[in-house]
Image 1 (tube, helix red, strand yellow):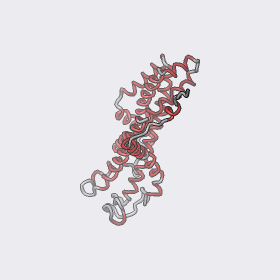
Image 2 (image 1 turned 120 degrees about the horizontal axis):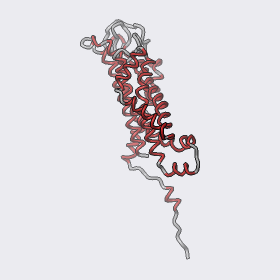
Image 3 (image 1 turned 60 degrees about the vertical axis):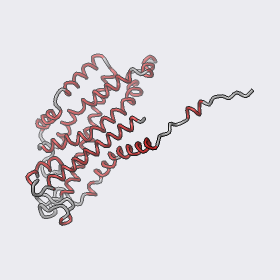
Image 4 (image 1 turned 90 degrees about the horizontal axis):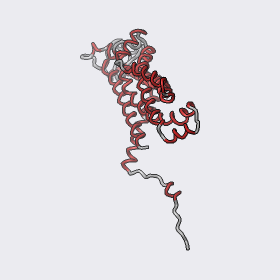
Length: 288
């Protein structure tokens, strides 16, 4: 008598099919997340895209947008506003990515050590982290820049100092959550050492949520860096910086509005792109 045997391999091999709205949503999310790479490529290519040197006068002062071949006009000394906005956006974008990378490196290492070691090491590292978190981040950043002196590198150091504790807390929480998983408990019972346990079982599981949080911070970091630059704590003139260019030219707002407004629009566009990309990455991680 023939017996029909089940085909578990076929059942396990089936893939969950997405509905049309779900597929469209994933495509949109991938496009949104790819904005980070598109903007980064554009920032790398700014020396090729900018029509003029951002530091040199190239036309008559205070020419309005579209006049004399200048798409966004010229500033009070005849420099091309478009070129200055492009170079300023490039500086702000790479600065935000650098702060995120440095914050992930320092905060991730602190959180990983605290979550893996436990005991007094965990308590000591988290108390240090809490001490940084208890201080208002903008005030602490301003204080650090004021102590070190205005400058692009000093601004990056100041913002990185106030940003890493967020990632330390996040990574430590992820490590604590993963440590209670059955496969991690089994690895501990098998005698796996702490370093190997962290490298092979804990850290890979903490990476996705940490990257999502980091991508969501890009827009906020751009606004923070532009705010410090607006207060005069960034690069000194005549370096092109979006926040500083808006602050230096506020007196022209009522007559030659394009000089302070265009750098502000550059900050807005970068912040929106960073937030959209972060939201799309978060949605993509939720669907997996």
